[in-house]
Length: 99
Image 1: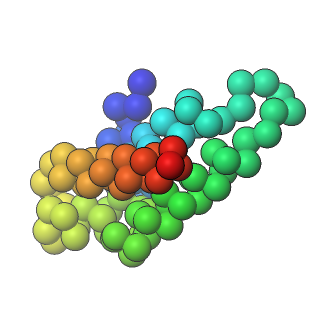
Image 2: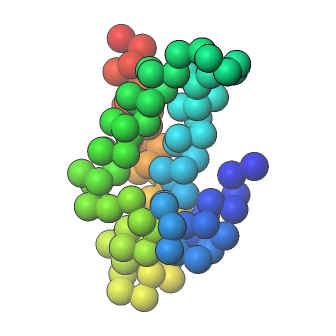
């Protein structure tokens, strides 16, 4: 379902990092609303914190600059290291949220 987030958005590398997009989907599934009118403030707060952690880690949420940092100037390397670190950031956040 989220495979097209890889490479920013459909491989364009111009949009939000797919690891962050996927993390937001997970937060929405866990804490988002399932009906109109339900409170989703916890999900919004967690989403904001996850975004802040991405920016602290890479200085941006955009795919291409993150890929350059991880894969080098030509940004042709795999996304796996970024996805792995993004998942770790999400898991740390979820662990904190459950405590």
